[in-house]
View (cartoon, helix red, strand yellow):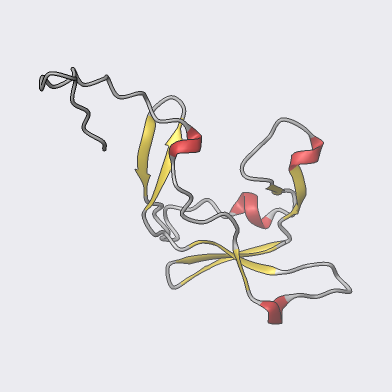
Length: 119
């Protein structure tokens, strides 16, 4: 924060803080973690870690800046959709069109507090 002083020594009135936008929120992670040993070029698949349950700052338009922490216990995660073979892999959670679908989840599991998926 930069403090400004008006000529003559009086302090300027503080300006109201603007609501943060998505551009103001630093990215914690942009991509899923991949293990190069899991790349299967013939099948065109790769295994990723889709969540570790770690806290991360996120921007939700209706709420503003939040701290998100996912519960990764088997009782908290609905794995049926991921294991169905129909779950889409989306480009940064966008759902506005076919271009946002990068692929699909072909397998998924929870192991030691992490979520793994084959894409």
